[in-house]
Amino acid sequence: MEEPIEVSEMEITYQEAMDIRGIPTTICPCGSKMWNLKTIFEQETGKIDMYFLDMECALCGTLATAPTPEGFDEQDADI
Ligand SMILES: [Zn+2]
Image 1 (cartoon, rainbow, N blue to C red):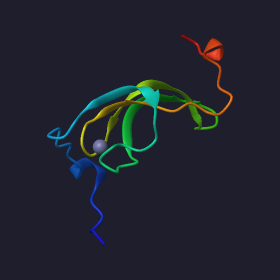
Image 2 (image 1 turned 90 degrees about the horizontal axis):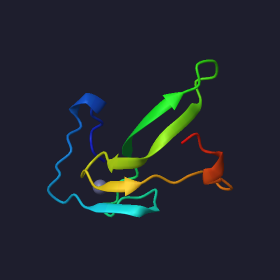
Image 3 (image 1 turned 90 degrees about the vertical axis):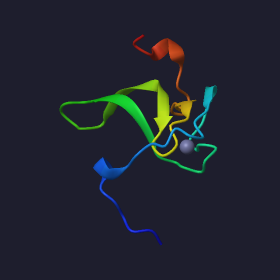
């Protein structure tokens, strides 16, 4: 098992990065399940209030589309 590293030590290689935006996904083609994306938290609860659907693989830099909760209707989004 690999030694854990600090998040600040994680580096994206971009050598194998792709643009697979369009179909929501949770797993990158490189196998990673960790993503970098922009989000806003609810101040009172600390829960995620909203997030952008464009996200980047935390390991390889592939651009992808974030999934939305089951039953999510784009009409409900504050776009
Ligand atoms: Zn990746």
